[in-house]
Amino acid sequence: MTSEARRFRGRGRPRAGESDGRERILEAAAHEFAEHGYDGATTRAIAARAGVDPAAIHHHFGKKADLFAEVIGAPMRPDRALPAILDGPIDGVGERLVRYILTALEDPTTRTRAVTLLRSGVGKRAMTPMLASFLEREVIRRIAVRVGGDDAELRASLVGSQIGGMVLARYVLKFPALADAPIDEVARRVGAAIQTYLAG
Image (cartoon, rainbow, N blue to C red):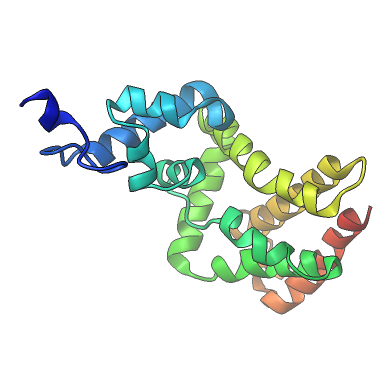
């Protein structure tokens, strides 16, 4: 194959004759995320490791967050839902956030994958810092920007801890009263608790 044939046919498009570019990007990304974490891994480094143009990552996956979600098999994308959740009156953010999580987890497939990911995230040495840094950058920091204030990062982290605890108790530990409670009830009560953090 000539050097010209090896070049991309267009920005972000796979090389001619190479159908495994997407898979090589995923493999390279898994290594880069494991070695450097979500923040430390760059799309340029991932592309170099995969032997592709950096634009190929955008072509196949979009943003780094999308690539990471594909690597870990994320069953839901709170980072994508967050703009709509944070839009509007601040006093409704807590309930909207809880309702989004619970509604998404009503789907059995999503719930199974989420529980598996949660267990991996807290139980595997390589996965924990990757998942934590992804949630920190793509979710916690964006909540902090929305609420503002000197201790916004702390309050946003407390929101994350409240959500994580709720998911753990309802879907992993399965505390009977919480596991059986209707979404509306849980969203109202946990949402109210979250609002205390958001309000400062």
